[in-house]
Length: 51
Image (cartoon, rainbow, N blue to C red; front, side, top):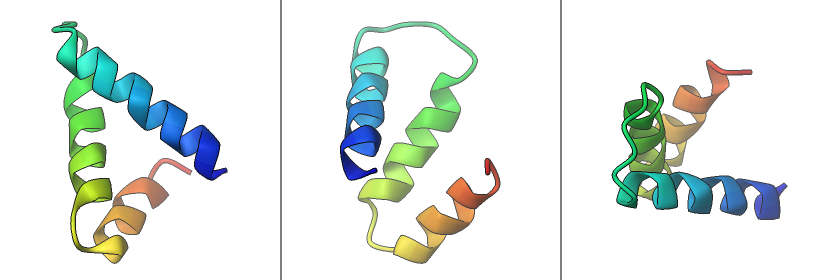
């Protein structure tokens, strides 16, 4: 699961840096900010709404 998550985040980071204009980019950017942030519970709360 960690490898899959890392690949998804890598793909999202590449999408954000490529300058792609899509509607999902702000959601991915927020997820990355929460994932890299200091609070694990904030990230889990955010991601749990998608399951």
